Image 1 (cartoon, rainbow, N blue to C red):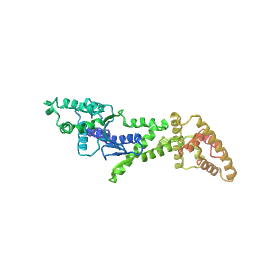
Image 2: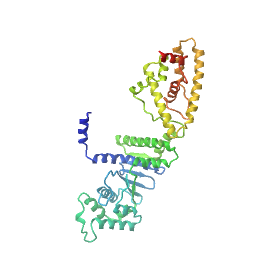
Image 3: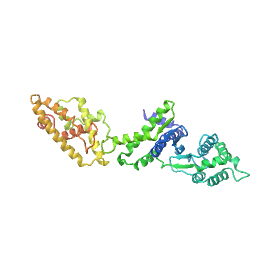
Image 4: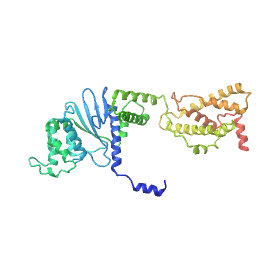
Amino acid sequence: MTAEKAEKTRGKRRKTEVPGQALGIGLQYTRLLQLLLVAPEGSFCSMEVLDDVAQTDAQSVKLVQSKSALTANPVSDRAKSLWKTFSNWVTLAAADGCDLERTQFEIYVSRPVTGMIVEAFAKASTFQAAKDALMLARNELWGEAPAFAKRNEVATDIAPFVENVLGSNQDVVGRIICNFNLEVGSGNPQADVETILRGHPISQNKVRDIADHLCGVVKRRVDECLEASKPAVIGRDEFLDWYGAYTRKVDRETVLLSRAKAPSKEESKGHFPRVFVQQLDLIDIGFEDQLEAVSDYLMAAADRTDWAANGEVDATSFDDLDATLKKSWKNKRLVCKVAYGSKSPDEQGQMLYADCMQVHIPLQAMVTPSHFIPGCFHRLADDLQVGWHPDYAQQLKQKKVA
């Protein structure tokens, strides 16, 4: 795309509410994950079944309306989202769609927000306090009884919802308010997931990876249910099995995960002058295998830096590993000489190289990615601490002179 076309594209940017709508849908998945992480044993959490998100167990039901709040305050005194939410709950209760004795009502907003009316509703834990909060809302929007002088001034986009809440059976509305809670996030829902995980007995440097995995698993399961026209319901106990299985895979000091990106073909070719690639030339290793060797070398180097920086591996462990690799190479070189001494030097080198590329040595008793040990061998070969050709040092010296 040319710069001119890109500029035109920027000029035709979609309406500003579109990102907010997308974020609102995505927030439901994230809130669902947050609920699953704290839900009691034997409970079930759902999305777009009972409400935006819901949690049910033998004792109670929690109905959650999630609000992303990119810019506007969705719970301000005259916010449409606030009054529409309460109106929907009132209609649901009036139609016996929920048991007010065991139903909790929640508005979840992704960032810290408040409002005079919603704060009064959230603080009302007794029926009398709920009646007082309703009177506060009525006086604010309609004016004092019996005249209700401001009633006709209520904005048309919220008037029907306000009428339904303030004009319905006040015992029903009061009980909803008694069971209402306003939950606000930090402004970063994904970070809030990580905050929950940091309170669990898992390694702190694995939190982000586990959070990313759980977000993906929850979204996939919900999408699979919706695509099959089934209710998107996830059992907390089933979720805990997924959580535990993945944690056991990446945590408990058994597996080291690579975050290194494989280099492009052009990037790899730029490293062909390096000594370890020249060593491969000496034993007639082909172009594609040389590209793979460079990739292993670069990714292993990135892993060593990353793991040490994140505290996943003590830096001295790499020295121990190098010593072990050199010892392994020395032993294999001797075996190769005895077993294949009649072969040509190139063939002997190929046999030794292939044997070393299949070595599996743990690092601090942890399994490493498949590219790591080969990459470490190439690092040693680059420093001439190991080699593949029976006379690699002399051959490289002659090649350099030539």
